[in-house]
Image (cartoon, rainbow, N blue to C red; front, side, top):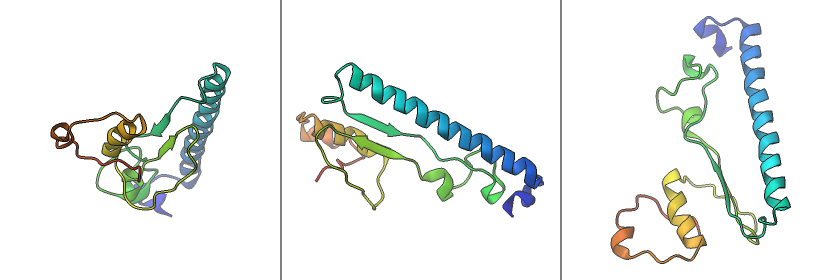
Length: 128
């Protein structure tokens, strides 16, 4: 197992992974609370929710623990979930970037941006 490469005992590695799983469960719980509050306040019909992160996490892969060295998939692959009231689900299988968030939000809000300003965008809208 890859944990042995960095000298971590199997039991310790499993403990660290369990802690990380606990963080995921906690985040899930807190997001649930946030969504319920948005609904309770009557904002669920007109609130766009975007969930993302700045990097993935290393849990021993490539001998790396909780650092972000190298261009490995476990560090580069991050969640990007966009919920738009009244819009159905769509999974994008191609590569997208956090740079695509602003152009997408501008399109969702139907905000016109001049072509001169758009030249400065590195991302593209994820809307069709």
